[in-house]
Length: 163
Image (cartoon, rainbow, N blue to C red):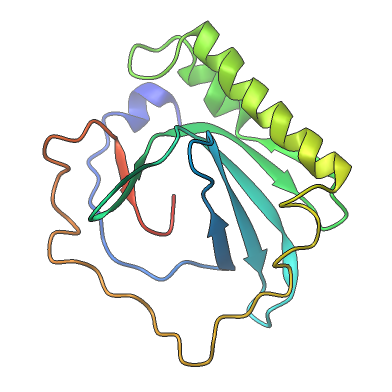
């Protein structure tokens, strides 16, 4: 969908179940990315998803970040590919997003993470690929204000499980 059309859409936040994968997310402090371990419904590890995003702002009610469109898919064998390059290119230079220098910094963060994947370094070293939530774990509830606008916060996204 073209950016101009997308930005005219009315959106509504609704609670839902993350599908089709079970997901474990690592959000390193001050990093401009998060790494998501994805699991099939039977618990089999299917790969990593790297979400390039602004460093997460943590506060008492959760986390805030700004998605930066460009992502990376990393297979269990650590082969990888860029995701959403067209969207990233379309947003580059738009006044609501990032300029050319910002785009270069976003891509450089992606290349840094790709180097970790290619080297088999953490978090792409097999750690947590056999993760299973404890049998007593229940889904967390949403706070009363989950659907309220982020009054006073600058972020476009306020998330628990991610985009």
